Length: 263
Image (cartoon, rainbow, N blue to C red; front, side):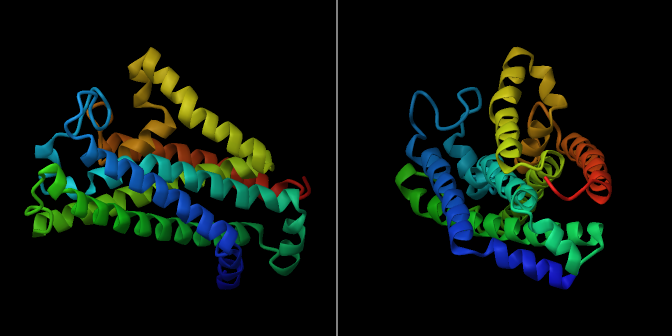
């Protein structure tokens, strides 16, 4: 198992992949966090027009991580793409057969790859969280936002909870990507279908009928990153997302263990 994790991590830390992924995560984190403070007095709002983030909200004990929590869903999409690509390309390049020669236990190989990609996702979340906190701290004075409550004991708890929630959400998105990569065995197809569903189809369904947000998988993971929303409670999101992941993971694991490894 350790060797599988190390082998997968060697792939994940390639400069082209690691720096590109972290760079994209930092870009979106910096953009969304900055807009919360720069547009705080904008008539159009600095976030969701229906739920703008006020100066009082930013000055609260959890104000330091509002930007970080908001960008959680985008970090999740990045993780989805990485997990899906790293899983499906083993079929495309024909390397999975060679891996199974060294590690014939298919599920053990799959578990090792998943653990390594989870660590990659946590590193990405940690770096993004540090950047978001730094930007929030430096932009707060210009937006007339007080930061006294941010670094109290309660504020520290809020920061820790936000990191945990975003990590769970991002890893959940990543596992969905891995499931799609195993099912479709094509990086392009798995990424395209997943991103289309998360960014377009779910938003359209939510706009047509808001009650669909109570059961769509992407909405559940987004709610987890935010610590719960008015529409979806944290417990409901955790429970339903867990069911989706468990069912999808079981189907993908069974197919992976029995299906031919060639694409």
